[in-house]
Length: 193
Ligand SMILES: O=P(O)(O)OC[C@H]1OC(O)[C@H](O)[C@@H](O)[C@@H]1O
Ligand SMILES: [Fe+2]
Image: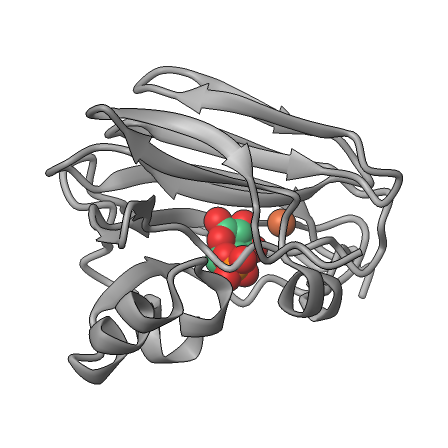
């Protein structure tokens, strides 16, 4: 992929208000594609019937090689499944030891992280705040605002890849739910060892 031929710089636009682009189309994930990931299965199935949009994000088509940087915005919409906040599926990177940086542009939420050894961490997202997800940590964005989208800008090594298998079958160890009107991190009742 390495070449000495001139390469054009790429210019993109992402709205600070919506996270969307005027020139590119995002990928969308609806409840029907992830209903099984929420603790309250029946509430998830009801929302899946309406096929509610949970989040969108950009794949800018950057070559999947180690010298490249994959990037884009990710927009997680406000909402709850039962008392569990809307979230992304979450994933490990296929090349496990690759990191990712997220910078919060709008909204409020959490980045949930855990490594295969079971270390769990979470960090708050608030506009202007960046979260560096270390290599080996699965990561999931969670929107804890009642009414605003959570918009982040992310960047990770082009060759990192996505590994959903472990998260789809086991889930994260912790989930984020509303308790007495505020977000609380609790054990995932569905987490399987
Ligand atoms: O891949 P998901 O867990 O569904 O999340 C959706 C997307 O969110 C991000 O912001 C990541 O950087 C993307 O690489 C990811 O694909
Ligand atoms: Fe990632």
